[in-house]
Image (cartoon, rainbow, N blue to C red):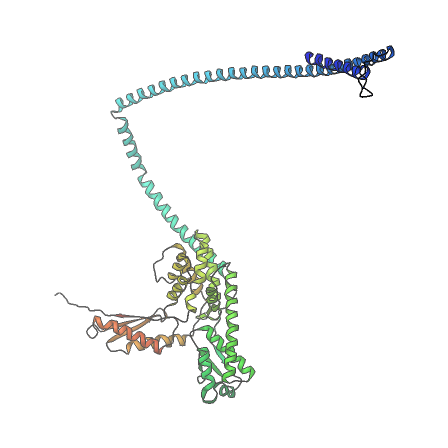
Length: 509
């Protein structure tokens, strides 16, 4: 730092001298002519010297100031360096102390571990000596004594274990039965819907007998147009004052009913008007059907189903099974099934879809087959999940249950359909249908007896084995099924089973 100050002072002094020389002694030439240098006068020289002294003093003052600042800064740097050095020394001392303490602790632990190992070795030695003494006294080895004790303990606890197992089994059975009843009751409680079972038939009341004639039309042209456009059979002769509409498709039957009521109010009944009203009514019913399907899905929290499936679900509004409306039945069954699924740890989404779609085959009117078969084919067509399709296929035990969700759908359907007040059918119509099926079956030669079972969905035909051989039974089943199809009105399908049995009996005397 001192060298820097000296150099700075020298530069300042040299600069002052140069300034005095250039401003005092060196005069610029006034002309281009070469003139002889002139020596300054005494006053000028004195003034120059005074000026130089002033500059030199200023330079010295500046140099002194710079030197002082440099010394102060140097002192601060030395002070900070000393403080840092002291802190480093202090940290080194602290680290050395900690290292020393750690080494002492490690040595202490090592010593304790060695002592513990020695004690464990002594204990093991004593234990072994005691075991050897026991073996000599008892005359048994260690393994023999262990086996003996285990055998004695097993014999002593055998009766106790058996008794507790029996008690546990009895308690589990009692608890499971009680829990099952609670689950069923709770599910039925949560699944109860606020509706009354509906008992309806498609009947249109007439204001007078004259209206019946106008509906029939000249040479029956009006009623033929009705039947051709709607696909519904009109029965005008059975009951006075009303017309009965007959069709397995409930939507077509509803279209015919609404269109007929509109025409009676309008008063203009002729083929052209009938065609116009039926077409407009079809559009209205299709819109209502889609809205009802969406409403049903939204009530159950199910979305993103194909529009065609939603349209099929909307047809539930006009479909009744023994007086129970399919929308009400589906809502009730789904609530019961979802409650059971949550309680039993099953997949509630699969159960919900299975309950919603289990009867969708009942509104498929364009194909032949049971509602289970038609429903399965429809769901496979739209590529619904396999678990849902299996639940629909198995809800009447047509196939063995493949998963717990199928069992839950079956149970929920049984609870909703068989509870008191849920369904109703006129006994006269039921007996008439069952009797007709049995009579048709008995009318064939070689038939011994026939019994309609499963609410008329199956008929079992018993034949004389000496009159009908095995080959003829197949043809007989086909003939009976065809005649039932042509002569009897029934819901769903009727399965015909022909039984042929030969028995030989003898008595040993």
